[in-house]
Structures are given as structure tokens and as C-alpha cells.
Length: 402
Image (cartoon, rainbow, N blue to C red; front, side, top):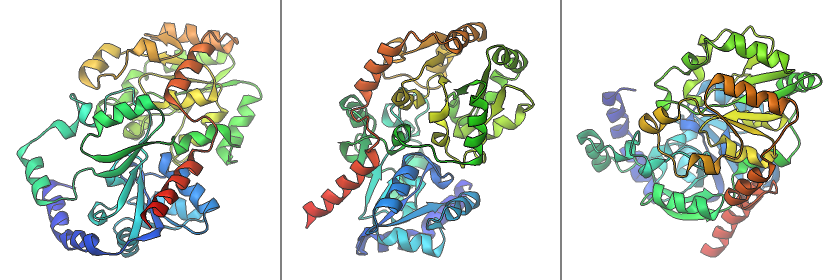
């Protein structure tokens, strides 16, 4: 949507915003969304499904701007609407609580006055985020356009009742990153991490992976994005894939490759005809990587927050930081010393990566104690009950207000 169309959209929704200020909210109506309204996944998904299965007194609604996502959620038997449909507006106007994983644009921004938005966020930050991000952060770019937009349209910037954290260290980060954007910070835990303590949900893809595991180890490569997807990530891999596949074959290992949300289309540039490499698309995993993560034997990543979550699995992690200096200069700075908080083998080029994979494929794991130390530092709760805690906390708010 170009700027003119966006401004017209804002103007037309001013009456809706005014109505959302005065409407009476229903404390038993909760609305959920994720990834700009374009995906069914992340912390919002796991809390949404928990509420649907365990809280008959709550009506949980999923909102999306994507037709495929809408169809997917409805096929699972849940109630879902297009964000800007009549029913999408209706439920957004009357819901007392709305849950997001990426930001306020996960839901309907025009109906958010006088309601509590719970920011579940999408990972423990290694990279600097929000107001702390001085390299790519849009919050720190105060152009005339952004100033005028915020002045005339009060619904176009983040505002949260609470941002959910996983430890005291993470609370301190959020207090800086979300300063002025969040009323409070609550130490509860990420709903999506419950998956590491629960049974795997059977799907055709998980069945496929289980058959692979009968003969091979199963690894997954999950790099973070580069400049919010403005760089084609396939260029970093394309010349190495034949060698990579041969190495995996020698080590009786199958490598899953899942690119970041921002690089979903880049995977189409990579030939998917390898015996020991599988490029994972959202359609394979019903838009949710956590549906298969517990099946994997080890993780390869770089600067992605995924490794903090994977610590719940207590399995080896390889940190493939082939472009660390460039990343620090042009993408994001880090909150911590990279070496101190990444509990696993480090590789800075492809040959080093193959060496580290070979060690793990042969059963050598030298970082068990490191993983436990970092896991405990960043995750207060390690019991698979984060969804339950969020629900209990929300209901306790309701009791306090009576």
C-alpha cells in the first residue's frame, strides 16, 4: 500500500478509532494476531490454541490479512476472520484483550483505543530492537512524514499494556527497548516454548521427518534475516549447496533449511533436488517452525533468537557467523558479547561449519554445561506451562479490577 492509499485508509478509519474509545469491552473476548497479520504462528498461535482448548469461558478469535492463513486457521476448527472484514472490525471493537507477537500491526490498529494489548513478542533478543536499534530501527527515524503521521493519527504507533519477558535480564532489555511504549513488563515466559515439553502434533511433514530419523540425524539451519529481507539470502548459499549436500550424505545427516519470514521468497532461487537437504516452506509446516523443532537433533543458526528457545531442547547448537562484522555494522548491534551468550561451537566459514557438524554427527557434544547456564539465565520457566501462566495472569487482572 503506497503512502497516499495508506493515508486515505487512515482517514476513513478515524470514526472507528473514535468509537473504540467509548465502546464497552468484553473481558471474555480475546483477539489474536501475528507477523503483521500475515501468518499463523509464534507465541500468539500457541496461546490462542491453548485458550481454545482449555478455556471454555473465553471466546478466542484469530485475525489475519492473508487468505491462506484464514483458510488454515478455519480448517483447524478455530474461529478466524479477515482483519478488515465486518466481523474482524466487530470483534476487535469489543475485545478487552488483544495478543500480538510482532507488533500492533498484527491486529486491527484502528480499534485499539481503550483496550489492553499484550505484547508476547517473538524471541529473546540478542540483536538490539525497537528504540535500542540505531542502525535499522524505524522508531529512531523521525522524518517529516512520520512526525505528521503520528500527530494526526494516534493509532499508528506501538502501545502495549504489557510486554511479556522470560527472565529478569530480558525485562531490563525490554524496559530500554520499549520505553514509553509499554505500561508494564511481566515475567511469565513465551507460549511457543511450551512445544519443547509437549507431544509432537502429528502432520504429514512430521511423519516424513520421523522416517528420515530412522536412518539419519536431523539438523536444521535457521539464519536470521539480513536488513529486513532487503538482501537475497540465497546468494550466501547457492554456490555451496552441492558440497553441503555431499557432506551431509557422508555424515548420515539430513539438513532442513528454514529461512526467516522476511526471506520466504528467496528459497525459490535455490534448487530443491538434494538427497540430504530439504528447504522448508511455510506450506510444509502449516506456517509454524515450532511444529517440527523438537524433532531435530541439532540447530545451526547465526544471530537469531531461535537459539534461546532451542536451549529448552538441551541439544547441540552450532553458531555459523560467517558475516558477523558486516552484520554488526549494517544490520544490528548486539545486547551481549556474542561469544559469552552463544553456548555452542562457532564456525566462521563453510569448512569450519563442516568440521563442527562432523563432531556433532559423531556424538561429540562439548557444550552441555554452557547451554544449561545460558538457558537458566534467560528462561525462568522451563516446564511447558507458559500458556497456562499467561491465562492465569490475565484472569488475575480481571479480578483486581472488580
